[in-house]
Image (tube, rainbow, N blue to C red):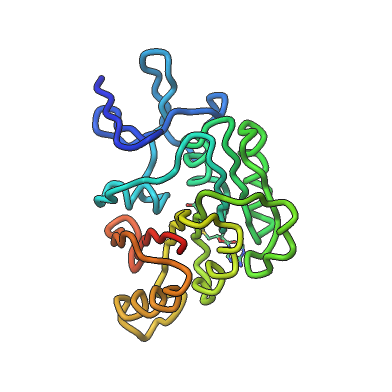
Length: 219
Ligand SMILES: C[S@@+](CC[C@H](N)C(=O)[O-])C[C@H]1O[C@@H](n2cnc3c(N)ncnc32)[C@H](O)[C@@H]1O
């Protein structure tokens, strides 16, 4: 087997994208696990994760590091969060904000075997509700498919350190189904210009239609 390191904590094993498991061997979404040279690799499905899709579609830099604090908005049932949890390792902290009680039930199971994940059942639009729980973060990851996507990121930027990065999965259809996706992406990013500079933009088709994965840096 051949292992190639793409970024800190992100590898390919025989060409398949993966992270190294810190979750006691438990599968999160039916992903393949492969043991190689004493390490357990978890295959990372780009159809299930926008960050994986962005990496495979040519993301130039991945900024998450071991021990980082990450605020994740729209954690759902834990698919991408579990890989972020692997990347930041045991001493990192991953605050998982999720609005849906149904999704939270599954997320709690994932958090049981991943001590760096903190589940928070809240609405990401109302940051005061969880402000006391969150320390200053190195990274914000947002994937909420809401018409208020830009406003949610702006509101949560209060938790991001200066120079920290925001990973922003923008779904054009959740904002305006009549406009061309490119126009919507441009407008959304322009609305955030005072707070963030744009570092990278990656379209993530064919894995996720009508989405842009943007990397922003807090000014
Ligand atoms: C596309 S899914 C996220 C998938 C996840 N990022 C992954 O890759 O595993 C969007 C999630 O955002 C949640 N969501 C939508 N609006 C929200 C809000 N205002 N606050 C918190 N979560 C929200 C939904 O309940 C849903 O679970």
